[in-house]
Length: 120
Image (tube, rainbow, N blue to C red; front, side, top):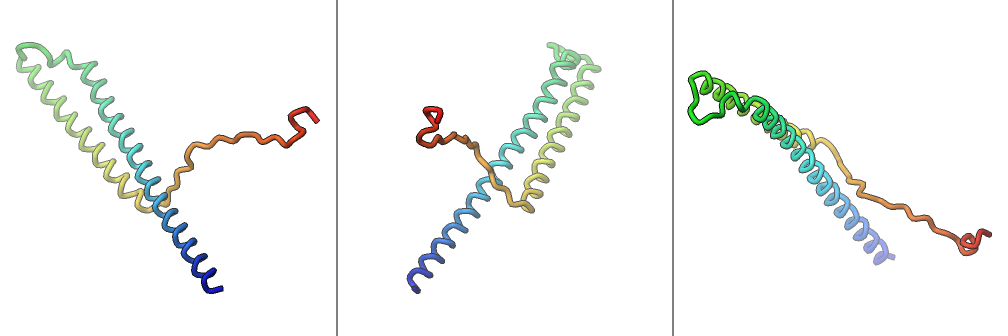
C-alpha cells in the first residue's frame, strides 16, 4: 500500500509541476503577443505620421523651418517610443499577479455510435 501511495504522490507532484510549467509558458506567450501588439501600434502610428507629414521635412536641403519641424517630429517620436516601452514594462509587471492558462485551439469531432451511420 505504501508503494501505491508513494507512486500516487509522485504522479500528483509531477502533474503539479507540469501544470505550473504550462502556466509559465502560457503567461510568457501572452506577454510576447501583447508586447508585439503594443510595438506594432507604436511603429504604425509613427509610420502614419511620417507618411502624412514627412513631406514637411524631407528634401535635399532643409530650410530652417524644415529643420525645426524635423526636430519636433523626432522629439514626438522619441516620446511615443518611450511611453510605449514604459507600457510594455508595466504589462510585464502586471502579469506577475495573474495565473494564465492558454486554452489552445480545440476541435470537437462528432462520434457516431454503430448504427447511427445508417440512420437507425
